[in-house]
Structures are given as structure tokens and as C-alpha cells.
Image 1 (cartoon, rainbow, N blue to C red):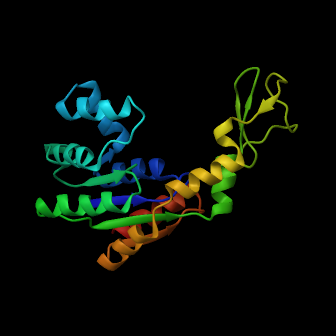
Image 2 (image 1 turned 45 degrees about the vertical axis):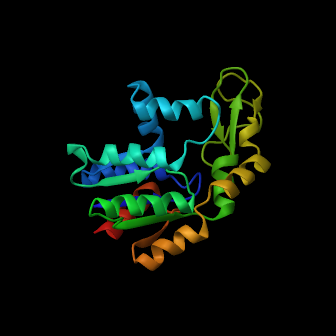
Length: 212
């Protein structure tokens, strides 16, 4: 079984992917882990990917696909794979489909965790940090007792640049799954949409039910 987990930043894909992989015994593969392993082990593909990464450039899809094919050819991936953290570019997933088809496989489930923009903004843009002790707070989920003041040391709370609303909005726009990709899997009959605004456990249960 091959599963692709889709969703915008802040939807909880990483957490849910780990939970689903544990429940189904599928191997959890993310681009970040895959790149780090290849770079650390200085494989030919790792060295090639590092040339792009060291210059702050995106690793070409063909390099990522080759890494992916090598990874899913291992014994531990025979039962299936949960793909998470792959770039939300339509042409990458078309290449992934073609690569799997070449191995006599296909994406069985494309699970889309849907969360409204307002909720995503709240999740991603509500983080504050204490200048004194570094403790983290969240406006909605873990607010300080007094606004702008750390409970632990009384230090001033501030927002990092990438947590500011305008930066978060730009990030969301760039990293959402494109409409063409969602339609691609919908036409293939593999798309299942899950409400990501439920509790963590409820989202996990809904994802597992969709797989079953």
C-alpha cells in the first residue's frame, strides 16, 4: 500500500504520518529524512543533492525520485510506504506516479488534511517566545497569564520574524497543495479529504478509517 499525505503547513501532517505509520506498520518516508540519510552516508545521490542544498537551491525532482526509488526498494518497504513532507509541486507527484507504475505499483490513497486558512494562521502565527528564558507560548493553545509577559521569569514575549502574520500568510500561499494536484488524485479515485480541525485523536481515527 502506498499512501501520500497532503495538506498545508500547520495541518499536522508530520504528526499524523507518524501515527498512521505506527498503526499500519507502513514505512514513513519524508524528504527531509531521506536527504539527511543520503548526505550523511555520502551516497552519490546524497553528494549530488548536497551541491544544490548547500547553495540554497531546490533539489531537482529527478534526484529526489531516484532517492525515493532506492528507498522503497528496501526490504522494510515491501509492505508499503507513507509519503510525507514532499514538495507540493504537481509535476513531482506526476513523476512519483510514473515511478511507482514502473514498479507495478500506484498511490492507493491520497489523504488530504483540510484546515481553514483562519485556523492555520492561528496555529502558525500565534507563537510567542520569552526573551529571557526562551519559553514558548501560543496565543490560543498555551497563552501566558498576562499578555506579553512570561509566566516563568517575567521576561518580555516577542514573535520571530517567520511567525508574523504577513510571513505566515505568504508561506501558506506558497506551500498549499495545488488545485491541479488535488484534482489529479480525485480523478484517479484515490483522494480522501479529512477535516483537520478535529482533535488530534479524531483526525488520526478519520485517516485510518479512510485507509480501511
